[in-house]
Image (cartoon, rainbow, N blue to C red; front, side, top):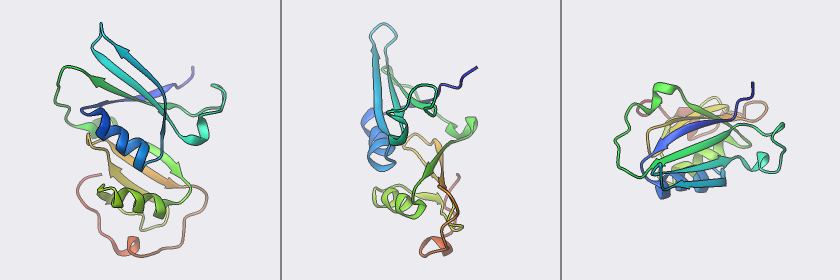
Length: 146
């Protein structure tokens, strides 16, 4: 058995790509538009995984946009997406500067949680050892649900 991807339903392609690609740093690697099924699937990968063979690459994130409007609620009921990042503080700052609430700040220099525009919980983990505690993160409280 091989784990292939995680699928997340989205309401707005541009808003979601701004979050996952522009702010979080993932790259679009494939897109499928289905007239018959009335959906668009967009597959994203981390930059470190793009050139790896399928045996070495990490699972992909599949964004599914259904052309007929739907209201998706309870995005957290499947758990969360998790990504390892090179600099937890720089990543959180980039997201915050892009208007994203840091729901669980990286007070420990290791872990943070944010939410996508569709309410999907995203965990960010520092690569390697935790970074030393630093402000404003060290004293920042949790905001909302994560």
